[in-house]
Length: 518
Ligand SMILES: Cc1cc2nc3c(=O)[nH]c(=O)nc-3n(C[C@H](O)[C@H](O)[C@H](O)COP(=O)(O)OP(=O)(O)OC[C@H]3O[C@@H](n4cnc5c(N)ncnc54)[C@H](O)[C@@H]3O)c2cc1C
Ligand SMILES: *[C@@H]1O[C@H](CO)[C@@H](O)[C@H](O)[C@H]1NC(C)=O
Ligand SMILES: *[C@@H]1O[C@H](CO)[C@@H](O)[C@H](O)[C@H]1NC(C)=O
Ligand SMILES: *[C@@H]1O[C@H](CO)[C@@H](O)[C@H](O)[C@H]1NC(C)=O
Ligand SMILES: *[C@@H]1O[C@H](CO)[C@@H](O)[C@H](O)[C@H]1NC(C)=O
Ligand SMILES: *[C@@H]1O[C@H](CO)[C@@H](O)[C@H](O)[C@H]1NC(C)=O
Image (tube, rainbow, N blue to C red; front, side, top):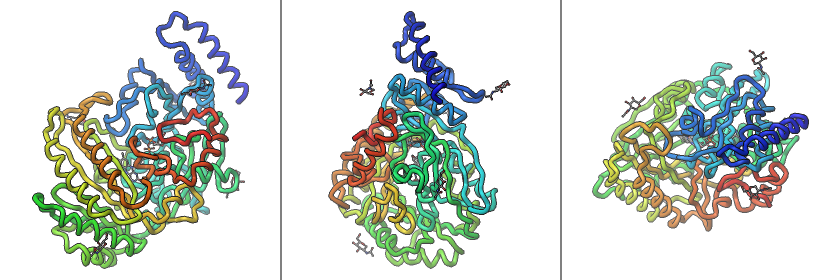
């Protein structure tokens, strides 16, 4: 590695002499040439601002985030990752790792323009050891293909989110909340070990015994702060033979929705406290209705008993749909938001999602629920909005029950600071542009963004669940006071900063809410 480093330095040195006539800034060209020199395989590639694929490549999940990295590198090998990180170190360039590109704030494109994105989507390896049931998984795999691979290896699963296009990398490092979470935990609880290239280009094999500090830090604070993960090992589980899923709809009186919202949301909190681990539930508060989605491990009859306990508190829904099937069928069913397929989905080009989120230890107060109600209903005026470029705006609040194995304080991870959380709430605006975006930032609805930001601010101001805001790092947002406390836990910060100093002393891996140096 040292030899390679020197060779790159020479390449970079030559470049610096050669670019005097170039219009680009001197260090920029040096970095790009260095990166070209870092490519040692045939499959890896580099997109820069002048590449044809650049705009498509900086389209994350939807076109909402318009950020311009200096380059997007797609390495094939751990050696190429290490070489690229050394280039960044040589030119003091900020690095943003990217797996599935689903960061709500686009932090996998950098926290501002000019970052070097290292995208691991070419790391797609998969194998499963039938003895230990440990799966080895490339960090660039998406959840859908991961679920397919595990199923095909002998009907296995790991717990995780239901959107198949979410990347394993960011998802596993921040948490990974999904339909069998209360039974099996967050995806991060399944991490047995991981391979990471740190801020000095060193390859680190991290597990509970060989790198205990990094192992603690990566699970809950690992996204974008210490290095780039290329591979995970997950403990897989034999999938339960039967899973039952309920979709229930409660109508809401659009003139005076508050009574219904109060009843359904309070009931959700009470029920989440007592529901069995086999059940995981989501409550989606919409303008015209409230949807309850419950996944229960077991038969439909068993599931009906579980759900009846909610009905006792909230009343019976207007409409219900039941589905009983294998884990694979259930995962496919729950992928309905992405077309009901677990195969590699398309990047949406007219879908916009602006989300904010907090987690709650105590049930939300009536005041907080009234803010949800008002924000959702006031957003009505944005339909066919002033800028004339949306085809409908869908504001909502989504409550997801935590507890069960999601709350696993013995995991010795940063994530343990969330011990005692009742549910997370995402309050978000979704909208569809009237045309397809051809590049990030197209068809932007600034009124929608502004209304969504205000929703977030009001919820933060009304937060009643604790003395400081607490939030889930996989639902990361930019404008949150004391973000490091909220996402990683105030008491964890000094220890995290020591890990940072060891792994990335130049602070190359940095974005607005990354772990700072001590
Ligand atoms: C449509 C949609 C549905 C979602 N559904 C769920 C859900 O059901 N449950 C849930 O818990 N969350 C969900 N999320 C949130 C999701 O878990 C997070 O956005 C997650 O961080 C995405 O991971 P990613 O790899 O796709 O994102 P990226 O944008 O690639 O990365 C997210 C963060 O992690 C860092 N990172 C990425 N890869 C690596 C790596 N290899 N090494 C080190 N750092 C890395 C990035 O720099 C960035 O800061 C959803 C998000 C969207 C947009
Ligand atoms: C790249 O391709 C060439 C020609 O096909 C082959 O000889 C070489 O081994 C390949 N190199 C790598 C690193 O795959
Ligand atoms: C590297 O860049 C950061 C800003 O991104 C700056 O604060 C720091 O001083 C720079 N370090 C060196 C050694 O130039
Ligand atoms: C951790 O990794 C080391 C070195 O790779 C290995 O010897 C050890 O068995 C691993 N420990 C666990 C708990 O997996
Ligand atoms: C449930 O808990 C709330 C507090 O969130 C309380 O006000 C309410 O009366 C409880 N009962 C029911 C039936 O939901
Ligand atoms: C946008 O793209 C989708 C999928 O490619 C296509 O079905 C749709 O017609 C397009 N819409 C517009 C307005 O171009």
